[in-house]
Image (cartoon, helix red, strand yellow):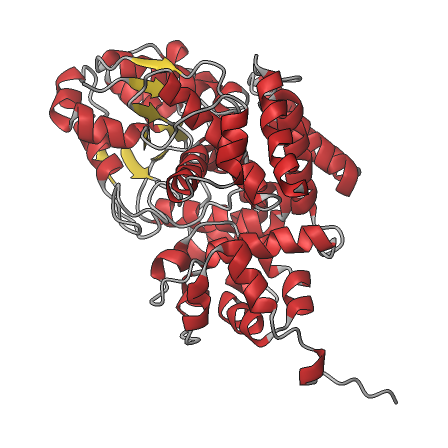
Length: 193
Length: 296
C-alpha cells in the first residue's frame, strides 16, 4: 500500500508567492483578508470551483503557488465582481483572479482541455491582426484547438443563427492597422529594456 | 454642452445587429446626437486582462485617446463588457501618467484619454434624457408586458456609481415610462454565465437557467437586457436550457417551461415609440415575441 502525503511541508511552499500576486494585481489589501468567506458566499460559481475564493486567498498568502495556478477556480470565475464589491476588506478579488490567470498562462500550467486560455490567446491574435474581433472567427479557432468534435454539436445553433442573419463570416477591420502595430510593438520595446 | 461619441463594440456588428439598429433609432427619437468614434478598435474584452495586462490597457486605451482627439466629452457604450473594460483602462491611464502603456500610446501618436466620460445608454437615457422626455414619446404603451429588467454584472460592479450594485432600478423605471409593468426579482445583477456558456457549458447553462426560472416564477412574460452577451445567453441558449432543465423546471414549479422572449431594451423602447418591428430587428430574436407584439 502506498501512502500519499496530502499536506505540504513548509519547505515546499513558495512563501513569497503573495508578493508576485500583489505586484501583478496591484492589490495589497489581500494581506488584510480575515477569511470571513463573504466572497465565497456571494460567488455564483463557487460551487463549481475546486477551491472557493476564500480558500484561494489563504492559499496565496500561505505560498501554495502550484495549487493556486493549476486550479480550475481561476478559469471558472466569470468576472461578475460580486466578491470585489462585497469584500469587507476591499480586496479586489476579481483582479487577483486575473493576475493568477496571467501567471498560469505565462507558466503554461492551466488545466488540460480548459478552453478559456486558448480563447484569450486567439482573441489577442485577431485583435493584433485586424483591430476588431469577430466572434465567429475566435470561437471557431478556439474549438478547432480544444474540441474539434464539439464543432458538430455546435452546428444546429450555428445554423439557426445563420438563418436569423446573426452569423457573419469574416469581420470588420480598422483602417489604421499601422498605428495598432506601432502601439503593440511599443509595449514590447519597453519590456525588452 | 455635451458632445456625445459612440463606441459600438464588436458584438453589435456581428451577432447582435438588432441592438445597434434599435439603439440608433431610439437615440435619434429622443433627440440625442452621437457620433461614432472614427476607427475604433475592439476593447479586448475580458480576455486580454487574463493574458497581458499592458496589452489590455493599451488596446482599450487607443479608443479613449481617439474619442478625446475627436473632441468627444462623453462616449456611449452599449455593451457592458466593453463599458467596464474601457473604464478599467481609463483608471489605469489616470493613475499612471508615465508607465509603459502611456508611453506606447504616445509613441503611436495617441494623446489624452483620461477626460472623456464613459457611459452606458441606460445611464444616458435615464440621467441626461430623462423619464419625462421618454414618457412624452410613447405612442404605443407596452400594455400586458410584464418585464423583468436584467442589468447583469458589469454596469453596476465593481463601479457602483450608476446604480445600486445588487438592486438597481433605472432600467425598470425606463420600462415603466414605456407603459410596461416592472417585475421585481432578486437576481437583477446575478451573473448570466458570461462566456462560460461557450467555454464551460454545464456551468454556464445552469446560471442562465437559474435566472430564467426566477423571472418566470415572478410572472415575467418578457425580459429586457442591456448587454449583447447577456442577450445572447438568454435568447440563443434558451433552447438548450429548456432541453436540459425543462423537466427540472416542471418538477420545481408544476408548470411547463414556456420560452421567455428576450429583447434588447432599446427594442422594447422602440416598440413603445411606435417604430416598425422590421426597423428594430425583432426578426433576429430566437424566441419570437409574437404575443407581446400583438398586445401593443
